[in-house]
Image (cartoon, rainbow, N blue to C red):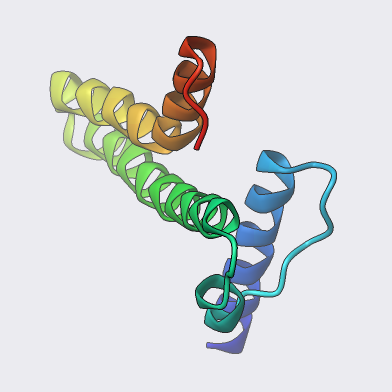
Length: 106
């Protein structure tokens, strides 16, 4: 169980450095997430947490799509799962990018 938690922590730390390469790897605590005095910092930390969860769900959906194609032979459903997993995985960075192009910052 400890190895699984360590692997999850390393996975989330690498996701955080991919989204914010200038920062060091964060410590995953809820007190840092909840104790934000600045609303922009709170929104940024929540957006980062949401991106981590979406990436985890997206990877699971992509893996399930590969399982559907490889093991069960359901090609159409598998391809749709893979496409949906990619959309879920990049949802938060994509919406942030599109909003910044329009001029909305959050």
